[in-house]
Amino acid sequence: MDMDEYPEIEPGASAYYAAMALEHAVRAIRKAQGKKNPEDCVVRSQEWAVVQEAFLNDLLRALGGDQDECAD
Image 1 (cartoon, helix red, strand yellow):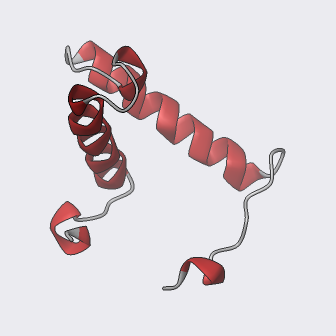
Image 2 (tube, rainbow, N blue to C red):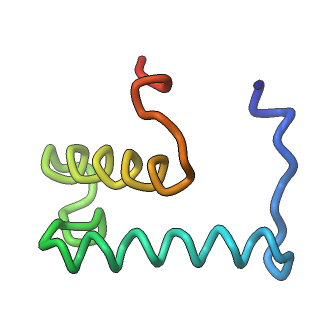
């Protein structure tokens, strides 16, 4: 699916709140597991890039996706 095909989620919409809740849940779970979240690292550092990718993989997994299907 092309990015232009995705509807924009406006703040205040129920889908926006659901997305924010999922993001916060993934952040909390990672913290409870002793994992870093992207904001725990210096932006654009090598560590940040690794943590960002791991965070996005966890978020994808929370959505029920398969990270192997999204590989480069």
